[in-house]
Image 1 (cartoon, rainbow, N blue to C red):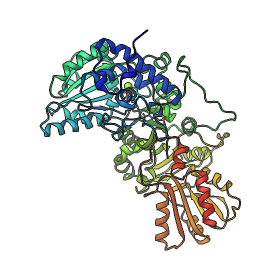
Image 2 (image 1 turned 135 degrees about the vertical axis):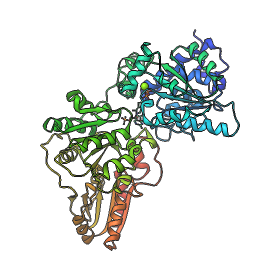
Image 3 (image 1 turned 90 degrees about the vertical axis):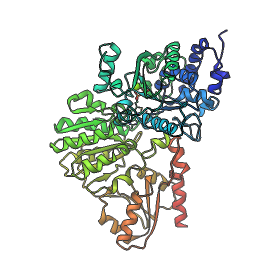
Image 4 (image 1 turned 45 degrees about the vertical axis):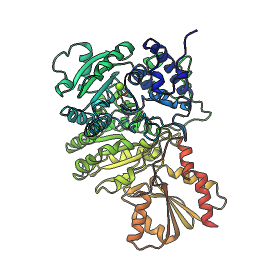
Length: 591
Ligand SMILES: Cc1ncc(C[n+]2csc(CCOP(=O)(O)OP(=O)(O)O)c2C)c(N)n1
Ligand SMILES: CC(=O)[C@@H](O)[C@H](O)COP(=O)(O)O
Ligand SMILES: [Mg+2]
């Protein structure tokens, strides 16, 4: 019978007691463990399978947690979590109140830096290394593990550029599997391919930046990894190790279909086959697909339309345009800042850029939105996918700050469609010749309309819609929260007290409609799936104050705290933003 090691490993200290020859068996066990859990609990699979040997080697060679190990993005850190004391509750990974899917400082001393957004690891590890230096500690090692897609981001280069002129005790490990979520792009990717082929022998980019470069080496060869890490441990100053791995290593389907198995959902742990979600009724489309198909439709009619995504062609569904109209659809890599300013440049020349960025990732390009787009009033069309709570990715990924950070920017229109048809119509409207930028925010997942492919119709900028007429209490919702409000109203016997308005535009507000609402209802309640501080409800409070209205105003949305992970339903319930909680609140208001 084959020896079993993983069951005895609850910390890297225990790992370090093993013989080197035992580590390949441990690697197999760790892979199986990850596969078994992710098969039923879901989560990010391919990235963690690809770094099993690297994870073991790092914890074996380095004295973690004293040595500081920083994982970039963190979606590849499942093996790290399992061998650093979280094996027994790893089945709660990404579940409500369970382990986070990403390294998180409050979860473990081994998680040296909280991550989720990419390309931060080099800067963070450098900060730790400089801090050690300043404290006179010359022994502690600082290691950043970063992927080939993440290292192409501007922020990673900023870290390398700084580190190269320090003598900080920093080791950057490039985990090069030639793919992000989708295949990696850009000149750096081509350069790395040439390095791997051996055609790029001179003028190594990382050596030119003053790093002690070694590699490329096979990241699945444990003895080689161990000896190279041991060697690098003795070298002072900035070092760079180029490691080649295969995303999805060890599960055939995950190796062959790397995009699908990045986060495959449920699958059969023995065969690797995906388990299709069964639906007994016809399903409404995902919002991302409505965007993806609609931009193709519009771009066929309007040759000025350009599509842009920073590294999320599959997640945003811009891939449909990339397939059908490749010369006008761009994946620019993990480069949100560049994506926005690139869009601004296109707009100066009369082109119509649809710049699709997840709401949470646009946070990284805030100055570009203000400085490069809004001040110059350039008609860039931002499509902000994954707005609102996104579920299991948790606090780093919820798209809840966008309304607050966008509505304060002059010139910028902010719109949230309540359904797929509204999304299509605002996309249609935006490319008709808008003279200013617009941000369209819509959620993760499916909408509500099966028959969504309706003929286009223009939306008047700054107009809301009354969805239900009542007396006394006006419910003002934004975006797909309209659906929650409708469900809440269905749970109430006597609905005559309530009017319901879909305000559609956070900016400009439908001022005429608001005056009418404030004059005909004694209480106003606003509902949004975004942070209440500075959000849509706040804009209604500002309106009320400005016009000296005395109506009672209740603002419902994401409270002033970071929301953790769980299903969107669980999370909405936890903050009383679900239909049942809302109906209770509404009932109380009429008691
Ligand atoms: C700023 C930012 N933009 C986009 C993403 C979405 N994202 C998560 S993982 C990933 C690809 C990372 O690829 P790579 O660095 O090569 O790591 P690998 O998955 O290959 O381990 C992307 C684009 C993100 N997490 N952060
Ligand atoms: C790690 C990361 O940032 C992405 O993989 C993210 O989890 C994608 O989320 P979606 O599943 O919403 O595309
Ligand atoms: Mg990669």
